[in-house]
Image: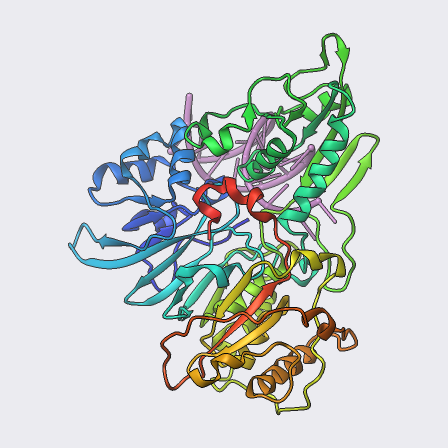
Length: 513
DNA sequence: GCGATCAGGT
DNA sequence: CACACCTGATCGC
């Protein structure tokens, strides 16, 4: 549950995801996604009255969020005051104080957040620096690095503050299976059941919230069976979702809901009331999507857990895991970070403590260089052998703001493939792989390895040389570079097998590169 | 009659 | 499993 109060230190005249109390005086409103806990006060009479008196106040959100919001008659009064901003399109907004006429300009950019349809992060740029409000998000490792608009001139943007979704920012939530892993686990279970007979049906016991749509669309796409839901008019203008949903009860996959659904289920009745087909009783299983997590060292178990005769729990998460948050924040390396959420069973101070080492404010201004040691055998990190096939099909360029050894430690889950000096054109042809010998690049790589081993288990060395030798180094186009900063461009291959293009396609513009 | 808040449920 | 939301009770306007 978000405890963000709506305002950011740098831009206190705008309000995000909170619309009560202090926020009633805001010059502009922003909504990151359409979940009720981020909409407090949005339909209160006080705000409605303010709107009626004001000429300039608007609510800014993504086109999908606007569509979802206006589907509910309770929010229709916003209709003329909502401005949909396209994803990844920097947009200037004038913040006007109507009493004094005072005006401030700010540029906002919406970035896909991967939390639910329409969900975005807000990047604000103005006189008080660049700040990022993440809203709720789930991004796989390396996704920040792939977002063009978090970069400028080939480097990560200089971000003053990040207002961060810290729902799972606790080491106990170290890893959560990826969307792809969860999806394929559920797919397999659903498939194995509904192919037994036309009378075998599945009930997806989902909570009342946006965010399961990619599950529905993927199941439908893969199995050719639409998903039964109670309502679909909110998706009327989103064909990629709409085509996979139905209000026709005769389908074999149900995600319909009812207050007494659990009770119904005991009597072999679906929430929509269906108990039989052609007078033949149905055989039903229930699958409850819920978050599963694993500690840093604990072995991941199955993403599907059987909880009864015909009930299952399936792994599913709307929020980033601890390691995904670390990856995100280490990459951005903002001056400050503020948690939006205090995870259950922990405290504000503890969350701050975990986040501190990941941002600049607490670090020495001078990046520490480890002494150059002997080049050790490079090793892979968190790489299960069965995932090998998923690797190396998609190079990930990582522009560097910081000096190389420092930045490299920021990607513990990536596999270092090649490093290319950007401001030393004569060396451009000598890009190095992980395990090569004597060059400058290799000394830097040694630092990388040293840094890595200082904070994780060291016994897990493995034969990278064997698995790497057939790889071609990836060459980069040369870029303009500042003379004062060592300019390196490093290619990683992501180790996260991800969920594949298909499963994310339906997030509309959200999850495009 | 409506909203805010809390407890308790899934 | 710990998310997001629903229902119902109670209180105040």
